[in-house]
Length: 345
Image: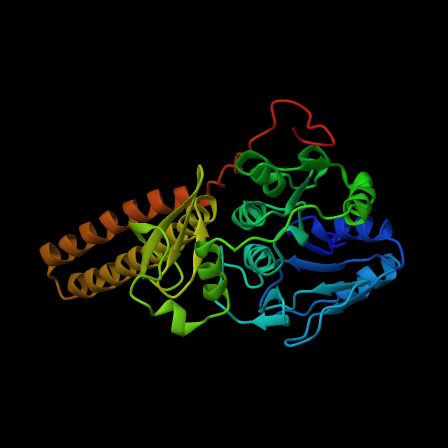
């Protein structure tokens, strides 16, 4: 009889330490394949497979495009590549970024959901913002199990809390119990049968794969047109609703949740302020220089006019500099109203 044998794990800030604790509790001979995506800088290098191999009994490797999937193995996403498990093996694709990340968690979750249906267990660990929420919803829609780390147990609770808030999570567990929970789930016979994947999930999987033949179809875009532009490419964003969870995707496939879009827009606003500050200070300096030249030639009235322009620019620059030097307030994270149980209702 079939059983759940595809485990996809997403983590971000605080995730390395959490993953080490988890793999310590997974036994040799673990009858499942484990896929891990952690946010890494695209130009960086990752030693995570080495860290996880040393931490537990299972071998961890960087996933390779076209590689066959086997049990008792941990596959780790490479920097700058989405990790997409599928029925024909592993795809490692430089597809469009999601929430500004590549690799991102949601593409891995969606690919597993569409490819393996109820055989999938999705796990969301410590991290900021909400990557993993829409992918976890896809896993749930296609018959899989969703597990979230207890936010009170996470170094950075935003990611697991977002999943708990927006997805019908099956289990909420502290990291010390997560390995045992996964072993129990993998050991259970799979009663649910696979069903035809949701068409929108299939389409979004094609976005992650950069499947141009599908993306360029006239009616390919899920959701409805919004009034917002994509921070990555400037194209119009389509608004997609996963229940009460709102997210966006552009024509070429860049995807954003509302939290990530707000964060990116805040960064863009910050950059614009620095640009404005530089322009004002350069304008003031140039006006002072011109004023000095006119005053040396005796053109006092003209010099006074340029001095006034410099003072105006300097005053505006002071306001912008003051705004820039004030630290942003910490992002609010929603706390659970009560301590989650090991199994969610």
